[in-house]
Length: 309
Image (cartoon, rainbow, N blue to C red):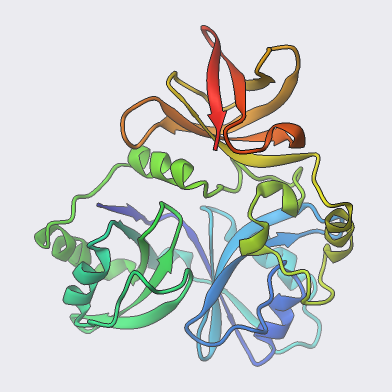
């Protein structure tokens, strides 16, 4: 199954100081990465509050940032504010790029056949990427976990997207809907900035600390409050997946199993990918974040049971 999105944001950073500069304004360690590698990271303000959740791909001559629809102008303005004498050029590439997410165990073989590269493998680490050619058009292939494993990201010039889509369909891939993509995203636990993350949240609250935050990289904007929170050993709330046999909805209040107190809120919800019940993401107070904890969710018809995953 594959999904197409022509609205996501893409920012290219060029210039010899690009890695060192961005390293100072995100939570992950970019200086350890070599071309073909990548990572996810938070962009925070001085208080450690999240301004953006980005995926970063390292190339020989540039860094490529990917994030939610409409985020490029704000992130570029934030970064540009700190550019003084550094050799860094920021370019919004969003208008010329289409994204295709190809999911499933046959995805590597399917893409390998289309681009003539047998080296593609589900054993690639997340965010590893490479350039390939399809009918003379250069495209980026990357292993990501956004819709569960294995998922491949294809970044292709928008003018060539339709031809690639036709090749995927001819190879047997089925185009999925936005609702199906949302269901898979939530099931995979991959947060969406603007729904599951906002400037009200601290980096560790999102539950992506191992993937997104380095505690050894040194100073960066927002590092001090993030380090203080790490020293405390826990957050007061954290994003978790939930599953229920009943419908769930964004904005619904989460209560403890006895229904005696409010302990969180659902931020995203959808029908489960297997068609049985619902899946959701929501913030829970730390006492209830353990897997298999049972909670109650207040929906339109009353309280329904859900399990933390």
